[in-house]
Length: 272
Image (cartoon, rainbow, N blue to C red; front, top):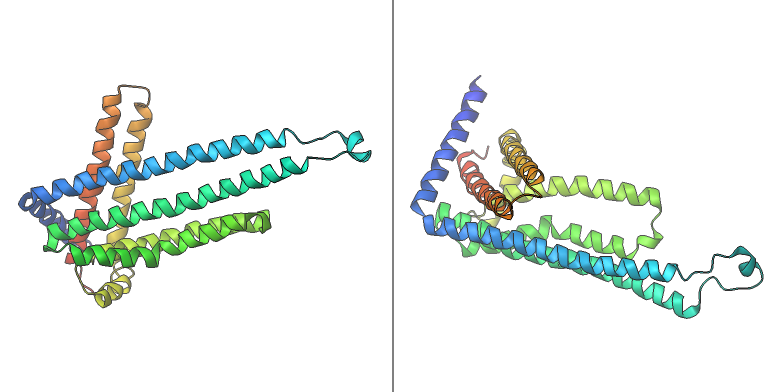
């Protein structure tokens, strides 16, 4: 019972302090909100751009595969399965598709690195009056906890033809599980960006593990919110475009409030 009361007090205090900080810094909060909008638009824009390129690469591959000679009789009589020029074009199109995948990974990471630093840095400005140092420390966290998965994705794509199907599925499933864990510790670090680097990494263990149930509860609430927004989008997908714009704004507002609250909660929790 004591633990529940203590948790409720921490949650309540963090909510009150978040509201007070937003009230005292409306300009910075508005900037944070605009940055969140720009981040999501940029992230989705980059993703869609490369999806269009990948669809074009896929169409080229299918077109070249249609030129293949599948006549068993002709092949037995010495006919060629595919001309050398077609094989060369097929290999080139496949390599181009892999290149687009790789460039998409690095471009999305760059967008995440830049806007993530700006958004979390602005959140720390609201909470503690600091921006530059949190911005730089966010870059360090991102390189440590996110960038390795970009590199792994790069290596996997470059060697995808040499990976057995069973191993590929296992590698993807394991990678997703590890990424979720790594992203959790990235978020823990984002709540501590006002502290020194050494203190941030100490907090990863002392808060990220020992106070896991606090942060997990907040993440569950965020997941419920995101699920609700996705459901609203599903219901209104063919409706008024203004409704979709309103839902997008609601999503951005919820994500910004989550970040401010996350910082406040992290400040309130003891390190021990």
